[in-house]
Image (cartoon, rainbow, N blue to C red):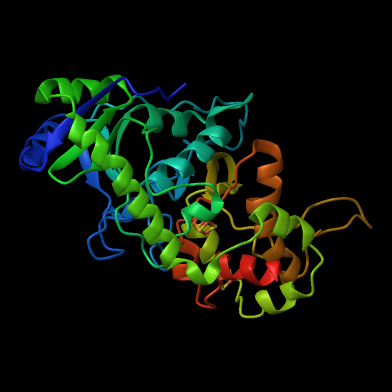
Length: 359
Ligand code: SF4
Ligand code: SF4
C-alpha cells in the first residue's frame, strides 16, 4: 500500500519556500514539473531528462512518465539455453531518491489509476513498484486552469486533500501543507512549521470555490447535461462518430501523452547468431488507436482483428476511458488534463467529442 491519509497539516509562509527547496534538494534528486501551461499556473508540465520521456516529439510529459519509462529492457540471456534465469526484480537503487515536485491533482488521479493497474491484483510490476516506493511526490493545488483543462467534468477538481507525500495549497501569504507520508512528515518536522491559523483555514474554501468557477467558466462551451458515462454508453452506435474521427491520422499521440494510458507491447530482441545468440525481452508503450494494436494470431478463419476500422478504434478509446473503466472501478480513465487535445493535429478534443455525442 503506497498511500496514507493526512498525517499532519502545517503552514509554510512564501518567504520560507527556499528553505523547503533546500531541504528537498538535500535529500532528493528533485525534478520540477514545468510551469508552462497557463500564465500564473504551474499546471501539468515538468522538465525531465529526455531519456525518460516516452516520446521526444508531440509529447507533453506528465508525472506518470517517471513511473512508465519509454522502454524497459530486461537483461539478455543466451538463446541456446532459454532456461537461464532472467531477473524480474528491479535492482536496488543506490543513488539519492527522487522527489517529483509540482504535480497537480489530475497527476495524482492518474497515478492512482496506474497504481491500480500495476500494483494491485495477482501480478505486481516490480519496476513500477520500486520507483513509486522510492519517490516523494510533492503536489500543488491548481490556481488557474489551462484552456484545455476539464477535470471537473470527469469527477475531479483542481484541488485535493489527498496528496501522495506532501501536498501544498496556495493561500494569500503561504501554503497550507499536508503531509501524507512519513517522508513528507519528516520534511515539515525539519522545517519546524506551525499549524495554519484559523484565518488561513477559512481562506481556503473561497480560493477553491474560485478555482472551480474559473474552470467552469473556461469550459462554458462544453457544459454537459449528462455524465460522460451515459453519453458514451448510449451513443456507441451513433453516426456522429463518423465526423468525430474524420481528421484522425492515427498518429497515437493522444495515447502517448495520456497519463492514464497503460497498454504495453512485449517483444523479444535477438542479437548475434548460432551459439552466441542472445535474447532480450523488451517492453514499450502501445496505442489502441493504431491498426496493429488489436491484431491477433490464431487459427485459420479466426477473426484476425476485432477493430479493423479506425472509426471503431477511435470510439473504443472513448469507450474505454468513459465507459468500461467506469463500469469496473466507478471512475473514469480520464482525469481531464487536456494533454490529448493539445497534441492532436486533428484538434480532437474529448470535451468536443462528448458535447457532440450528447446532442
Ligand atoms: S485522435 Fe489525434 S492524436 Fe489521437 S491518433 Fe488521431 S490524430 Fe493522433
Ligand atoms: S484522455 Fe486526454 S484529457 Fe483524459 S487523461 Fe488522457 S490525455 Fe488527459
